[in-house]
Amino acid sequence: MNDATPGPIVTATRKVRGAIDPLTEFLHDEAAGGIVLAIATVVALVWANSPWSEEYVDLWHTTLTLGVGDLAISEDLGHWVNDGLMAVFFFVVGLEIKRELVCGELQDRRAATLPVVAAIGGVAVPALVFTALTTGSPAASGWAIPAATDIAFAVGVLALLGDRIPASLKLFLLTIAIVDDIAAIAIIAVFYADGIQLGWLLGAGSGLLLVLAMRRLGLVRPWQYVPLALAVWVAMHESGVHATIAGVLLGLLTPTGMVGGRNILEELEDRLHNYSAFLIVPLFALANAGVDLGGGAVADAANSTLAWAIVAGLVVGKLLGIAGATFLALRLGWGTLPAEVTRTQVWGAAALGGIGFTVSLFIAQLAYDDPALIDTAKIGILAGSILSGILGIMLLRRSPPPTAATPHE
Image 1: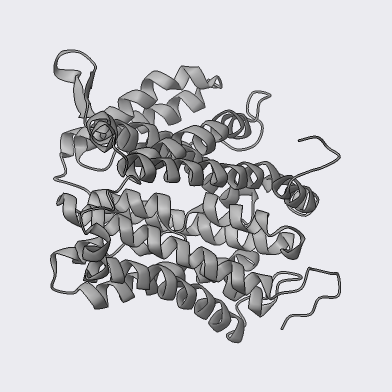
Image 2 (image 1 turned 45 degrees about the horizontal axis):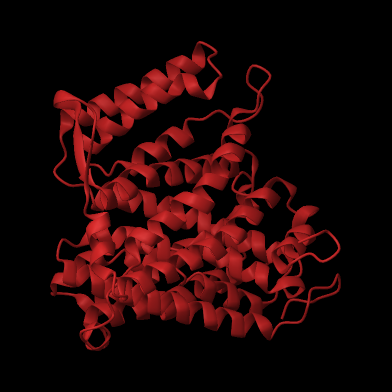
């Protein structure tokens, strides 16, 4: 595609370049990554329902051992993707959170109040909806599944809508998704830890303190931290806290601004974000989204409280949680809508918040041990995310293209 005929993602990115320059590259990669993620999801579903479905299952259950002696870790390929590669994804999330807290939208308390309140509503209400429908059943432990928002898919849908979407709405939804990620990370660390091993946890903490010491000594080359980062990951993995939390914490410890003549955080994000958006997250989808829809699986899901609880949480809970919290905050005078954003668009963005997918799939793997529950949860996540995306598009297409004079509805 040449510059004379830009596609919708490129066009949308150019529209926001002036308004949110520090986030332009992040938005562009997330939007394009959403397309690759969708392709990987379709491939996983087709593969899992093809004559080669056994090969699909066998591949991700292939055992791989890394390390030597007592330090060797044996996991199947699916777990290496979920525990290992996804630590890089969460590291990039940690970098973005750090940047937003220090020099982005979350730095300004007044500007951040509205999307933060919206995000809290978007986490709490879906969890409450899910819990209300599953209380007393084995499915209840998955209460956090519909609380997540998939940045790549949500931003990708906004980008594909082109000129109809103001840059300020993209930033509003992105900020909500980032706060949502903070909540999801805390939930995973607190509620989905498995048999805490205090010695290993102290080892991980010691490794993080050594990272800070290396920063104090002025070490600025990323490769200098790789051995220690791997050690922290191993210690976190063995501690019972999910290993991906190591990635988040290392991202949050990365310095912002110029250090030794280099902007370490931006360099790392530039290098790793493309790998995360175009390789790791699609690979995660390929490993986890493949559900055998034959043999009555869809009918079983349609009769399952778990699947309907997830759909209700993503579609209804997210919509009411994000939009309701936003309008309540406006009524209480806790902020104002961003320029050019209408109330109809808030409803549309809230609906897109129901595209949980990546983190929802991730939490489902942590919440359940029963493969049948996991597969039912996956079907619910796919259905809820698709319905949320369709609803968001329908609501946003009702709004006119932004102009300087667009009033708030």
